[in-house]
Length: 554
Image 1 (tube, rainbow, N blue to C red):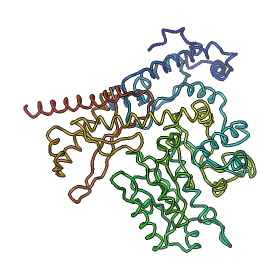
Image 2: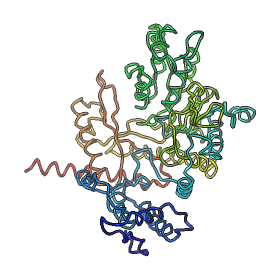
Image 3: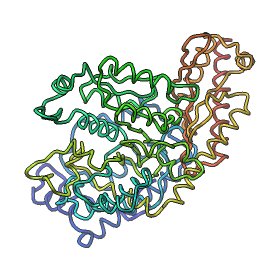
Image 4: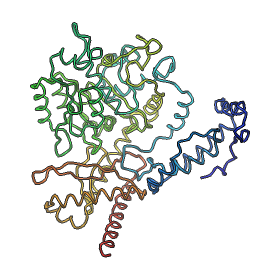
């Protein structure tokens, strides 16, 4: 695409040399800040150009360009800021050639390897509105109406998770002492915030002790008589919990990962024993974590049983539902999340299955006063007793992303989200059935939600696998092939599947298995697209084998 299709944008020809008057540059820069009425021509032209770029990008079928990473890097080696302002036409041409042309088409129906997908059309105009308004959601003085809009949107999600009474929401939705949820930049910050609240509440002020916030972790553990502090969850916990353990000062060694069963769900017997062992060792359990949709296979832990263990031991129960949380919208599948309503805190990512743009994570609290354990104040902002959202949050300044959440809940609604979730799971089950029926592939786990894992089996190993006679050496050969296949598919760029590593038990040993990881969340992905992705892998695998044989013969 070139700008020649449109009228040429205004250029800054009035300062061609180093001797350009400062006032002329100032005039040009001030035009950038002028209202649309003052500079309607420039504003309209830029909008038309950007709209063209968006339409071309969003209509792309291929998952990616096939440019080599090393070549791409060479396009971004300039460390000098230009002395003179660059004109708009030149800059947009630069973006088109270097950034847009080689950006991943996450909206492509054949890009089914990550938790990123097509967005509903209303997102783009709301993004422009949000940017124009430029509200800072940290404080009521910079986000007057938006603060209440955000609280309302979070209350809607809270009610879907916990389903408490009308009186409860009447009391807490706009009560500045209450926090039903906190909107953050992603699931990582949401998980960190949940454990931060759990830690501060459980090691809070008591008698002459001023609490962990004021006196620190060592003093808190000594006061309460503990030898250390831990967080317990499945071995498939997201790496954000490693970050949380590090930041909280308990160390990643005290993030205790419990084994999972054949369905990638935490082993309840092992979890119960781990909790008992920690108590016996006089270790403080900050939280027990359940997962509603693991990032590698989409599995859901038995949340009701975990809730029971947490309640018996008076421990904070957190559910990381960043991926699988929206399954609560589906009447058909919401039973898979049974027990989530018993969680003390829940993480959900809006930019995953709520189909909102990047930068929207949420953490919800059953107790609307729990977040007071992390409340901070400042004289110039986040004053005590105010509606300032930043006083109970890790992040300070942040954009008005709540507009997207509010719009999604209103414009898509319960039935709309139910349709999206049901369709994603239906198509995932279709893909699982196709994989099971194709000799080239092996399904590694039945999907719980709309993620699935499988692998390609080279022909020489298919009979061995069917007879369950695969050796460790054979498995390593299959691993090597799948890793190379996935890299080649990514490089070619027609379609995309990500990969992960699973651990399986074979011949009494833990053996790593490199797996293809499919994420069927894009509403635009059809059964034909799924077939195309699988057939592309078969074709690439065949080309790899031909290339290998040719090299061997030579």
